[in-house]
Image (cartoon, one colour):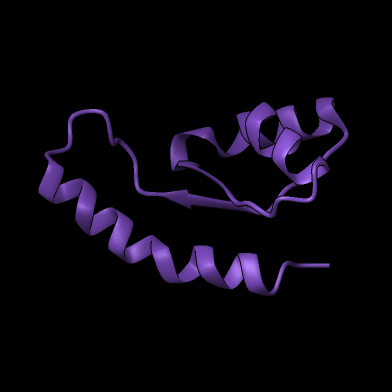
Length: 74
């Protein structure tokens, strides 16, 4: 969360991506930082996934990431 916040404050658009287990933690961290970047949560868990499985997760997420970069929520 700190990295995406830093980039956004420098004018570099980004999207915070994490697995679904971190929805609550991301909300709390955003509030603590006073910054609410675009967020996208992918299926959990990811740590034991194969490269092929991770590629599938990334392929499913990429369009949503691009949409959030091009049309951020107000």
